[in-house]
Amino acid sequence: MSEGDSMKMVIRPRHMISLGGYIVELEFPYRNLIVVNPTDEHIKIEVPVFDEEWIEEHRKLGLKIVPVGDDDNYLSLWRREKALLEASD
Image (cartoon, rainbow, N blue to C red; front, side, top):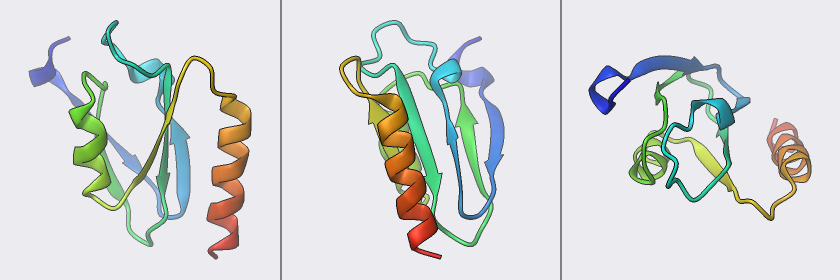
């Protein structure tokens, strides 16, 4: 699959997903991305993730993108973002 073959995925309002399985570039600096949709709108994203530009492009759509590095605790980051999302209800 190349960059021109991107698929679309819709993130429901006030929902979050993990994109670890959709990162296809070996040189990508993160092992996972937590994507949070804090809005009241459905937001369409492109997958897979090929480069760091993806992060900025999708932040411009209103999404919160939380990169997860090799030394980060994924579960702690997920729980923190979930708590922040629920607190904003």
